[in-house]
Amino acid sequence: MTKNVLTITQTTSLPELCKFLTDNHISGAPVVNHEGELIGVVSVTDLVKASKEWSVPICAPEKDENSS
Image 1 (cartoon, rainbow, N blue to C red):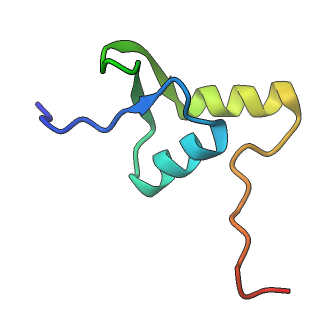
Image 2 (image 1 turned 180 degrees about the vertical axis):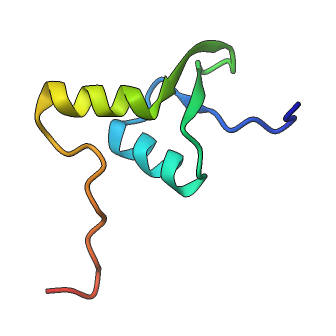
């Protein structure tokens, strides 16, 4: 069992969530409140559904700082 579980908070934005999941090579994460209590779970599937509902790219590629 994993001891150091990667979590997000209820205030994590969708783009931040996408980056978090991608950077950590995971497909979902527990959502905790400010006291560290579990309040839910979010997954890549939730991101896909949100993207379709809002017709916006939630996981847009980051802009290259060197490009003009």
